[in-house]
Amino acid sequence: MIDACGRTIDYVRISITDRCNLRCVYCMPAGGIEPFPHADVLTFEEIVRVTRALARLGVRYVRLTGGEPMARKGCLELMRLIRDIEGIEEISMTTNGLLLDGRVEEARKAGLTALNISLDTLDPEAYRRITRRGELSPVLRVIDEALASGIRVKVNAVPVRGLNDAGLVDLARLAKDRPIDVRFIELMPVGCGADLVPIPPDEVYALLNCELGALRDDPERHGFGPARYAKPAGFRGSIGFISAMSHEFCESCNRVRLTADGYLKLCLNHKAGMDVRALLRNGVEDEALRSALQEAIEKKPRRHGFLEDISDREVRRMNEIGG
Image (cartoon, rainbow, N blue to C red; front, side, top):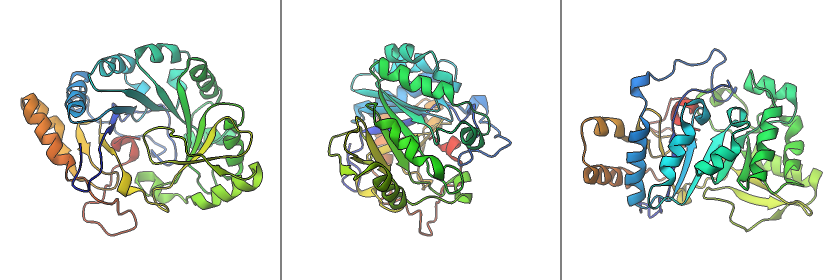
């Protein structure tokens, strides 16, 4: 599937819930959220139907997100249903890991091929401050369980000034003896993240280059997203940098998002997209659904425009959009 800018769109991030068991400072307010009404959230049947239509259009890679996807009952059963859709080659999940503790092998059997663990620090106290309620040890167990099960593992960390500055090098060292990718994701001014101060990716790179030894470019493919990778000598895994603000990669963006309440979102910072839920619940036929999805995706914005004054800027929080 090719959009109007000539980009191949083969990756969909599907948020299956806006609920989460944590309250991370860049994602949710301390008091939590008013969740989507149950009736507004897409059913598994509806999600599968949209995914099947996207697969017919050329989508090959699916990532389940939330909120916390494991907070929705039946998440792994949905994974099994998506696994059986013709054309889908990879199913990954972004999770904080806590509700996956002890269930990694079950997830692998359901079709999980890759796991992104959201983890901003290895310091238990800092972890509790950032998540406002989480315990670190189950997350570390899930990483080891996933590696033992043969699931590809990435650790996603968001460097934020005053929150996890001191622990970034320790996080990167997770990749020294493990075949995992530790990725530093530049904080974006979306929702609660707009009130925090990011640590620039170039500063993180310079820090790691100094503390771990010279970072050498890693040209191997590590997935389906925009991260650039490097590794110090002697590391089994790699260190990735996703720098949407300072090193924009919109020209190669290959993804769209489906929110938990059924909106096809074409770009993180734009409201542009389509109300898929309304189509589904008004009885749209399969061929018409595919045509509507294709027409919408062809209009995917050229650039995110985070640093510009755009007319349709997204105002929802990350848990509502899908992580």
